[in-house]
Length: 454
Image 1 (cartoon, rainbow, N blue to C red):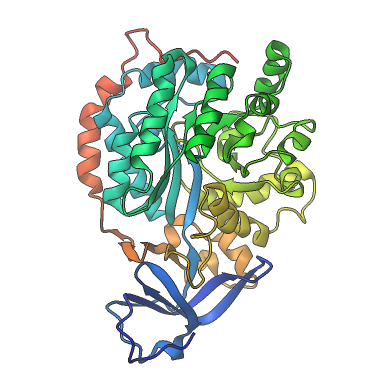
Image 2: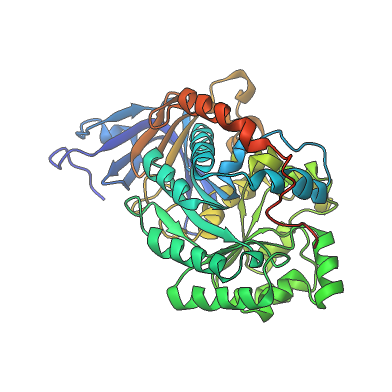
């Protein structure tokens, strides 16, 4: 398109940067000495810096020495669980759930969830995350925080079959009430917890509700190999086969983890009617000493997108998708025994377009291009740990860190400028959360919200 100084002022112009772009084959590339023109929350143009010199703008950012990337997307997390960061350490999965996390979660109040979500959003904004997919309790509070912080999110109210029909009703009511909220930045999903906590009847009903109301489903499934083996022993089917026979695979589905996906599951996933994606969070798998990881290569071969994730900070300790990108590349090399896989450019593709598709936003975010929402982060590569640059993709994936993000923008609005958060008062959140921690972490009551027994 032609840019003219006679046009009304742009809302934002970012100039003198290197821009990560995708070509018409979705291959990663970089445009140097580039400028991004933003108007009404949308990228209007990606052009040369010289072309915008005389273009009027309400705000300009000189980003020399920086790389502009699509905002990172955390495809599966439990944001409020930052309040439990470091509480349940060095434990096997069953003890982690039953002895610590699920007893503590029985204490949760809506205020605890709100404060945890605020701290999580601050952490993600500072790490260049502009969008996250959340699956938790008291999600009205999370929706409020998303609206106030300026982030984008796919939100679902989690439920177990042990809650009775009210749990399923709440997940639908939440999804319908908040769909399109926060000026369209909130999308919603139905959120059954997992096949081992939600029975076939509730899964089938959830699938039917998803199809009736045009909603995606976000759940945990085949999280690890033990779950797959337990499901085969008890139900005669893998967790993925359970999703097929209950109709969940006939919806748009975001499946968390999938390290227990086995070879026989691949044709099941390939013939799924809906859009199926998997979110991988490798740091947690390493920490729990799970023997397998998400089979990214096999999933790619059958056309299943794999987005990057952190899971909750109670297991992962951070919400750093930048770290997830590097670990995904490294763990996949180890799992496949092939240093040629997963390359830095492939990792960046998972972090951008594939993550956007995983959360159902593949047509609006995930790349910096005309017509896309202006979700952009600027990373400063002038530090000694990112110099010299021989391969920019490798530098971004394996040398850069979340602390190199200087600016985070969502819908054209600057949420962090030069490492200063503009929408969240972190010290105030921390003070209030710390006052509530003794009551939150008390386990003397002997309750738990659920039993982990796959």
